[in-house]
Length: 305
Image (cartoon, helix red, strand yellow):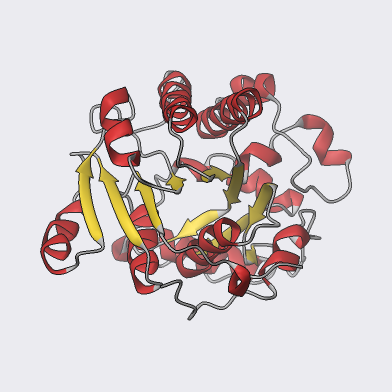
């Protein structure tokens, strides 16, 4: 089995798009630590991109690009000379929340980015950030055994219950896979659970249907560092393929749920009753064995230069 240590190319320039968000900016910093040259493609709506402006003056391996996923030429500019792309979608500033119209926006963005990759002759691999919600929402799943990467959320089910984030992520990922297969793009997706980042709030669209996810044993979360390392490893490991469910915690008991609720709510509202009378532990019904097997040999301290 090939490991990260076997990954060796003389020129390692990669693009991170959108680097404006918490995940994208964190991937940029980790890539720089590992010795990569990075094109950080940011949208103007992000605040975190400002830190790259200072970094780019002091770090010759970082270039900052203002890139719009709906502007094909700006995408091509950011991808020029890169051997890989880490892509994650960040809602535009004029449409920050997920609704019934967001799916079309996210699908168009995914199509534009994958089409641009197909037009370059240097991109060897695309790591596409998706969501565990592309797996969870299907009425038939509630009677099925463990869910894994082979499962897909049902689009009509998502529309019926207004699960707009799940609908948008599912359509965008399916669009990416269709284009990748048609254009022979080496694509891998990371389907992350609820990202436990410092700016997480109760308004996060992933949380729509949280009670049902909890009861079904599929409410999964992921630490920022773990999902960043996952992105880098699936890029570096030549054996990686397909989809990878990415999480390192399952909310399956009342104590976990109360702890998460206290994290999500502002301090003034976080004094929830600490009732632990419900001692049930919901059986976990989702598996990330595929990712765990891949991550066994990951060396987080390895440098590629």
